[in-house]
Length: 161
Image (cartoon, rainbow, N blue to C red; front, top):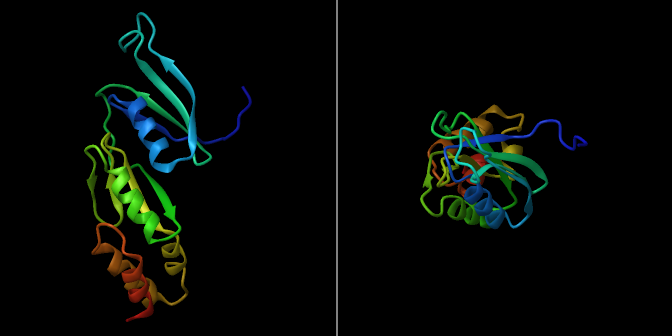
């Protein structure tokens, strides 16, 4: 096998990796499952059930693993999505938490399988790189008070309005 990507996110789910991947492919509308591996006989999982789903999401290769209850997903690992505009933020905010997910603070949302996503407008990255520390601080103060990111409110904070 030729290595196509040197570092690949490997996400441990208790169960439901196949459903999670199907959901992500639907939400983002770009990607594909590249391989599915099932548990065999004399393995920790139930023979014939999905063990690993390798997939590509918006050009990013990822692996989803049904590993059981031994490890839990936490906010210590998240996937950040840079959104072009408020409409994309709004869309992903709703879709990623569909079927049992929940909103978190500062643009984070947890999906129904426990994976945390940061849904962030791309303009935020420019704002926090501004050489004026007062502008940067206002942007951080604004984002810390939000659940879903409001790009217009971030812009007002950035502008000092």
